Amino acid sequence: MARYRDSLCRLCRREGIKLFLKAERCLTVKCAIEKRAYPPGQHGQGRPKFSEYGVQLREKQKVRRIYGVLEKQFRKYFKIADRKKGVTGENLLQLLEMRFDNVVYRLGLAGSRNAARQLVRHNHFYVNGRRVNIPSYMVKKGDVIAPAPNKAEKFPIKTALEGMRGKSLPQWLAFDEDNKQGLIQSLPSREDVTLPIQEQLIVELYSR
Image (cartoon, rainbow, N blue to C red; front, side, top):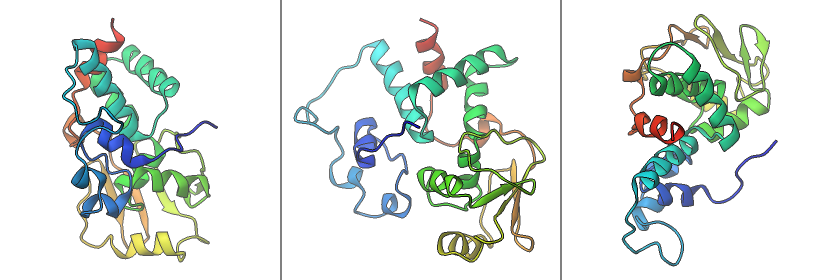
């Protein structure tokens, strides 16, 4: 399975915003954006002027990197979103939000989407009582997500569960602290995606 293995901080610097790829580190002064708020490379401190295509491309790359999706898979999501009824850009964001690794992150059970992806791959979570270790698995309304019984007391999960009390979650998600399980209450709406994303630019890019 292909995956990005280079420096994650370079991605944030390339897009010029915090993508929150490294959990707590992104909230400290150690964050690369705090120290070097310009693109990586020897020409990074210049002032590049992007064409219309360049602006659209950067927006697509930003969203792809936020959710940790490679190009081929991202294009597949766009084709599915384009075939669905409704606004294509909003459909695309909804599909990305419903990925299993993203839901684990949004429930607060992992510090970043990358961390959530690793925990999912290592069999840390169940969906409706069945073990699921595929980060791209698409959850549905009514699905129940819970830590695997033999993983709940391990460090990353135990720490996350201890920090759940009183934590604010998106409206489409709920978490039962007593039973230690999350619930997909509804499909996410555009208002639930608070990231600085202009999905219309992505639609325009793929519509060329």
